[in-house]
Amino acid sequence: MKQHVSTNENVEGANSTEIRKTGNGAAMLARYEQKKQARLVAQKRRQKYYRIIRRIGFAIIAIWIIGELILNGYSLLKNTAGREIAIMRLEQALKRKDVAALQTYIRIPGEAFPVNETTLQPLFLYLEKHPQAYETLERDFEKQQKMKHVYIKGLTSKPPIFTIKVYENRYVFEPTLYFLKIRLDEADSQVMINGKKVRGEATKDPFVKKVGPYLPGTYTITSVKDGEKRKERTKQVTLFGGARVYEVDLTKE
Image (cartoon, rainbow, N blue to C red; front, side, top):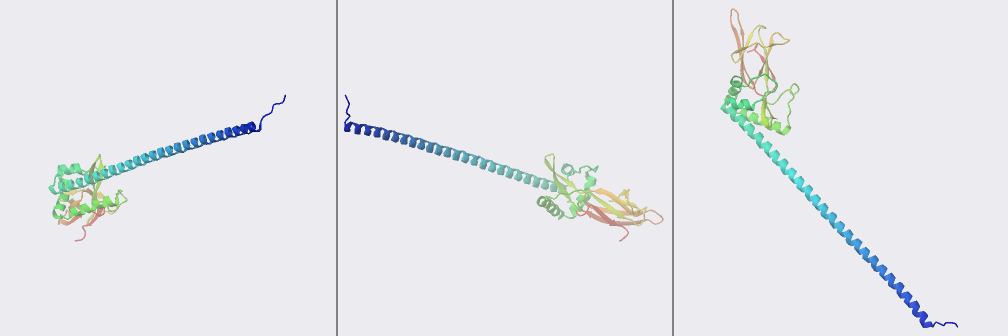
């Protein structure tokens, strides 16, 4: 016996199938939208997180740079202040003729040259007669600071009067040591510097003797020839700036 299905039942079945398909599609679309929204939210969170990290990084870098600038500025200020104080103390010691203090401020590296009352006396004499010489020293120190002046012995013809340097974490002053080349009337004439007889060093010219070293200052040079008639020639020279080797001609008045 054949079964007969009504047209209404067929239509209802088809509609049910369509409804199920439509429902499944809507659910899939909803799930896709949810996942999409979740991805967008996660992406925004990551972007926000990265922005916060970048801001923190920039803030740390800015703080580090500011800190370095502050430290460098403080170090520069400290060095400048220390330098100026050292110069002031040197000038005060020179004005007071404080030999003990000057022995701590003045440093002569690699030279067997004493810093004492005798060797400093020509400098005291010059500064006492020429107070403006302190301004010359200050200009010299200022020039060293601005130009980062470096004196290389044997290469620089006109060194600073005093070169300011840092030695064992403190400022010291290295004076230029001067030499004199003295031309004499007679090869066997005796030479006296500030009343003290000096032997001098022979040169290629038998009438020229080289003496030194000497600290900056004023020096009286005398040549003496012993014989039937005592001959004496005297000149006063100032060693305060200029070339390290100073030529003196005692054959001329």
